[in-house]
Length: 332
Image (cartoon, rainbow, N blue to C red; front, side, top):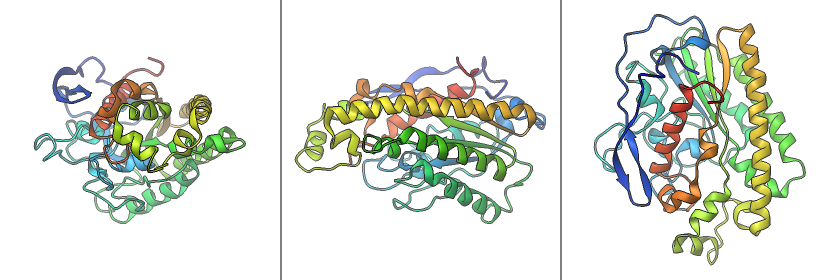
């Protein structure tokens, strides 16, 4: 949990609206005095965060967020630093870095602009479309190299406090119904990834996110004829356990999702316990997205390109859920 903002940061739902999706709040948290330098990772003020980073898959790369096959990295909930411009108005996107810049305008690392799918990261967003948990160590190496080369004059690697958001697992779950022991595999690779973060990235607060039930994407897509056509008549199958294996595949994927979220929870506890021996590293479980009811919001949360990836409205919901998690005690 980050400190000092719990009572002061209250959202008001005055809102922009979008057909089929909820209005989302305006960021109205007040300015605060410049905080003193932080010495403990457990006592960070948002103004102490000097660098943002992300690891993950196409969701964290922003694929199809604006309804075409391009990665919108500048608008990603965890690490984007752009404005919406033509979509709503010339206003900052609803992202964690844009919120943090309210407290530290010199924030570094946030991603900007668009990228071609499957590219190996941009700025300090190491996410790669199609990535699974076993690909995360390579993304960590990308972040370290990028920070020490491209950002070497802007980041004090050893001394700047970093916020790293890890959101991974959708691509593992999409084939989990075809695998023999997907949960054990996920555990081994996630454990190795967190260990690599601890050893390679100094002074870092790690947000590790649990994942939503992907079957909700299927349920939401059934409300739209276009989605039914591309999954049925056209045979588009980005997620085999969602589409190709029928109801049994979706049911099995949901059960494995529960188990995978349990793995994420237990590993967060394991590495959080290591905080007692380290004042500069912690891992905190952030569960907001796992409770997101995609079925309820239907097509309003899905990309019109593939009916699978989160759109701008869903990404804003991800931001708000993650931000609120960051300023509440774990478990609350």
